[in-house]
Length: 114
Image (cartoon, rainbow, N blue to C red; front, side):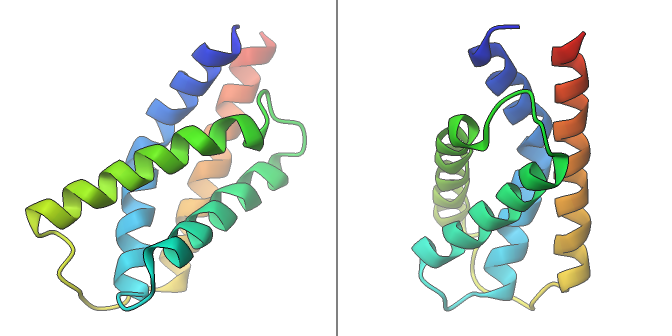
């Protein structure tokens, strides 16, 4: 499968998790600069990639797209008032989302291998 199709497939599978994780990071670190929150998101997703071992596509190829989607999501949430601050979410929930990211990556890897 061509790389760009793998990226589109992966991003579409990860979108709900990405949005959820962005919200959780914002809730957990409301007064933290956006660049630091983006670094947390990057580390979260990279750890899932690293956990897969051999992924169908490299993190370096996917991260620029995911980063752009995350930034656009934050912009929409800021414009619509979704991000007004709030209670911190638990680390367990973020950990559960990392597991879901890993599962999605494994699914794409399996499909690419077929």
